[in-house]
Image 1 (cartoon, rainbow, N blue to C red):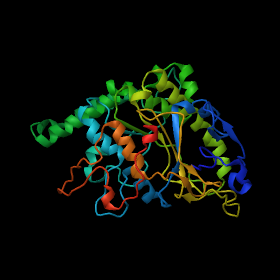
Image 2: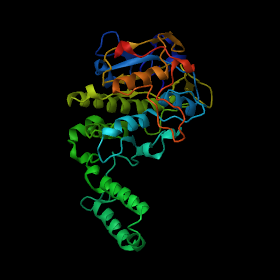
Image 3: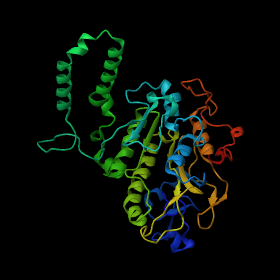
Image 4: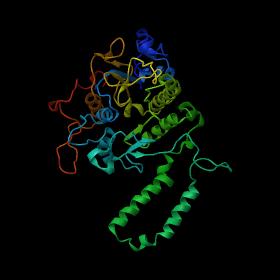
Length: 387
């Protein structure tokens, strides 16, 4: 997203920088203002802090995403796992749930191999679908999805046809395959599916989250937190790559983000879960502070990694603070730069993950959760001011 239009507005910078969103609105924390499209998040500012000096100066989707998700420099000899895969490795050891330890709602980012050299066991489980859509037939009305009865009928038919599988039941490979299949069916038809069944939630709460994909994704994420899933990603449907027609897209998408994220923070707090759940919201970079009004962009913002903002909340992060600052036009870091290794290192420390723990490389190569300062990675230190 654009930091100008969201977490770091600069009303005095003029139309070429603020475009259609010339206002900043106050929050429930004195001295903190955010973009006018976020009235609900303005009421929750005491629950989150804003890092307004995030930087890495990388403007490529794939390389910037890799930096923000691993803390390692793109183009190295090894392909490191993302933060989600690292959580699945270290936090998944004590997790006994039916749902995989690393879940993506609803589609993976697709910018790099998120499990890296850890292998497919640590690949994110992408749910697919749309939690805001109906799932089966109800009272003669055909809705999207497949009913439980039809799923079970398919399973029974497959079992009847699979005569080869019965003859090979003693094979270790077939036994592993059957075990995986049973776990998958338990996720689809058994106890695992209950977590994804939003019909169990009060309609009023579903309305608070928003009856759109992002809002319902946030509600599913809260249910996954309650189920003990170590790491959950919500990828905003369609993303924020607004090279053209930026302001139209922001008017459509920002209210959904505002509604879903604000309700998630409040809901986690009300259930006593925010103190033990880290929430962070960002992209791989920001967007150009200066609006490109020329055709074919017609009021667009391009990739921008020089400075942008990250929201962090819960899990030991203090609320109601601002870390660092950008300059008068949000073009450069003015105060207290924060690099990807600083952000991820802070998240890992709060989660009890040793940043210098060795990762299991399949060929025995030396690899660690995060690089050390001796490896030349830019760092300004952990976010101790909000930890």
